[in-house]
Image 1 (tube, one colour):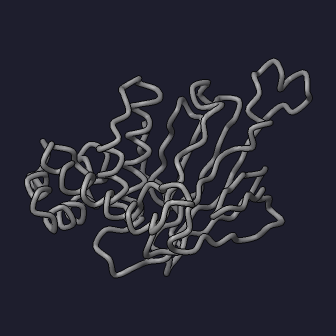
Image 2 (cartoon, rainbow, N blue to C red):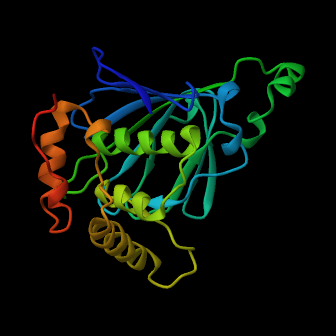
Length: 241
């Protein structure tokens, strides 16, 4: 993501050429709250027919509240279309899920004009509960994760699955296996830790990067990386010039 700016409510990030804007909200006792805006008229063509990977969070509830437009959510084996009338939608721990814009709204600009849709905006609040776990879903994770997506989608760098798993593990999140796989969530979590934290650390993949993390958060990011034998070397607390 580009354009990390301070604000009265926290950081603001713009990514995918302003197709996604995220702004931090402070809503105690939630560990994070981020207002997300999707501008579908600017949505990257490379993502128009691609859904994000399913994942789950073992230790935290995650909440979605649509403020404007419609948002598709898959949770478990069910699909939902959330609107402002839905209210707060809770995703329980261990539930496989993903969210994305309604596919019918991801039209070419000419199609949008001819259909009369005009400005296509989705705005929602993404938030989550705290957990005593060291690795958790929080603002530090989202800043690094959105920045990495910016590098792959806009800049054009190749997606590295180990890097993704490293970041997800640090965010208390794990990529889902198919629902029919026996003990799939336990296996997915084990693979996430093995490949993301251990093998990823050995190969030099960091869960957090200095250039994508606020100065005020970097000490906390270092504290977490120091909990892993193979990630300790990334915890460089020296002041940047």
